[in-house]
Image (cartoon, rainbow, N blue to C red; front, side):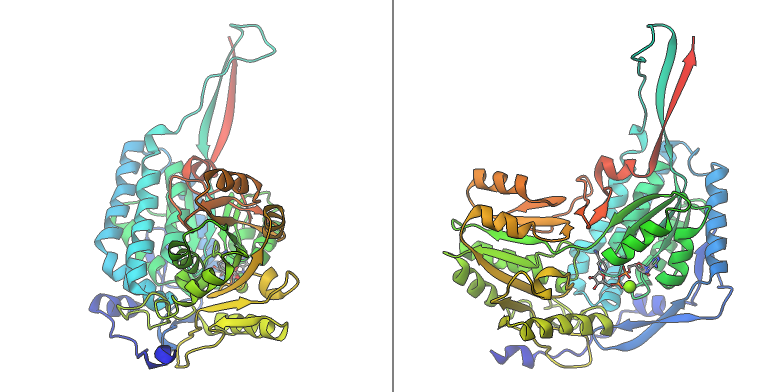
Length: 503
Ligand code: NAI
Ligand code: MG
């Protein structure tokens, strides 16, 4: 029971490559060069495993943002990227993917000490995933095109008409702190494939890997001004990007609250907007499951990345005939998920990203307890200087509780039992969110029936959080607008032009 308290959470020593990255001068990557900010403010980098400040980066000013937008605007308008032969752009994008993989160890470590995630997880998920976004989108370079189309209301032979695809233009891309490198690549890759130019702002909690990515994009030979990486706060730098009249498109991943604000702010200049927002994803466990397989699976659905995942399976609905066995099986994964320092090779879960998130998650757990929820596992912190929260299972919850309704973004699952299928589908859909959902069953017919009834952009059967560059990802309801990944993800960066010529 007390095994968790005996874990040594001392952080390991950083590698030389990481020490070098931490010692870099705080600068912005604008127009193909590292430049000083017009202001002198910086933001601290903290290692969430220790709470210690380990580096700092620039807090971009409005002037810095304007400079980055001007660079992206010029690079778009003069055609230095969009008019380059697709084969050359494809090669450069593959080169970026290769460079990411060549620097995999350093990038995984940087992500681990910045976000708090286990380095081993970053090495198998974040870094290869980041590279895959570039190689997948590179594959579209020779395949983007329109079509010829005969008009419907006009006589044949009167018109020659066709559509063509064109890049949307200058993009402002804003990403959160839970998968910083992966999200940066998920944003930049389709923009580059489409022929757009971009200004990317990582989250103020986690900017280390985005800055290293700028080095790699530079090394791959991407022309100046095509990709600009600016660091800073959302309500200042991010806001400036969203409202800037020279920006044509905004792509955002983050909270639903800020997503709505960004959508409003982008309206005056009628920018194209894609939003990937929050979730409170239900996981339905049917009576026929093999509990030995399902319990670790539904545990991973919530505890992976300390639950700081937009698609986290945070509402468990297990059929009453298997409920006790499933939650007992989940409780058996407690030592596996016990939080450890992010560079501990035995770790599967690290601390939360920041003190703020730690307070927020503990606040939800306390609210759940006050509202009458029972704590089946965790519900506390293991102590220490890092922002650790033990993996937590709450039972005896009801649909009015904030722990059931709101996105906690921590390792906290609310487990409920159900009796009939219609009831569980109704409960699963009783949320403002619609990002993802899971179903666990051996009954293929039930799986497809439930999948069709769940109001969610992605439904997983007998797995969770399986995300792939080829498959579109987007939210229903208040979980987002538009799609990323796959053909739809590319199209979000393309305009369609119709050309009609009278013969
Ligand atoms: P946030 O939505 O405030 O931050 C995400 C990004 O948006 C950051 O890069 C931030 O600098 C930027 N931003 C913030 N305000 C902005 C503005 N006015 N204009 C332009 N950009 C702006 O999320 P935060 O505060 O870090 O986390 C709060 C909660 O949001 C979390 O507890 C979690 O529930 C949720 N969240 C959801 C994510 C998801 O993947 N769906 C990711 C991160 C947070
Ligand atoms: Mg915020």
